[in-house]
Length: 132
Image (cartoon, rainbow, N blue to C red; front, side, top):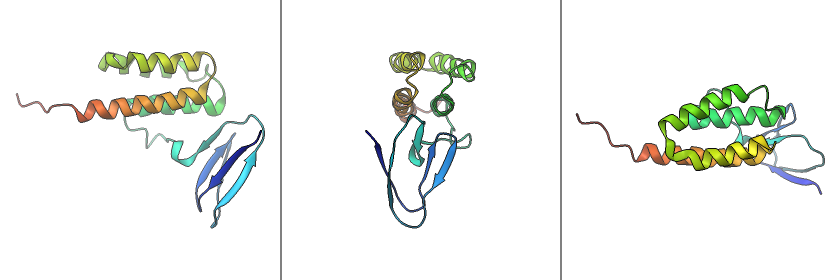
C-alpha cells in the first residue's frame, strides 16, 4: 500500500537523504518503499532545536533519517539523562521513547518525542518566577 502525500505550494519534505521542495502548485504523490520520510512541519534543525526536549527530538530525527541508532546513541542518552535530572516527572514519556528507539521504531519514537516537547512546554508555563 502506497503512502499518499499532499504538499502545499513551496512545502518541503525529506525522503531518504533527499530534500524535495514542491513548486508553485499543490501536489499529490504516492510513495512505495521503505525510505524515511519527514514533512517540513516535523523537521527540526540545529537552529530550531532550542530547548532540551527539542534537542532530544532532533537526535531521534537524525537516527530516523540515518536508520542508525549507533551513530547518535551517546548524544541521545546524554541529552535524556540531563533532561531526567532536571525533570524526573518525564520518566514515563522517556521510557516510552526509549522502548521505541531500542526496538528500531524511530518514527514512532519521534511522535512520542513530540509529547516530550509538549510536556516541557507545559512545565515551563507553570514555572513561577523567583522573587527571592
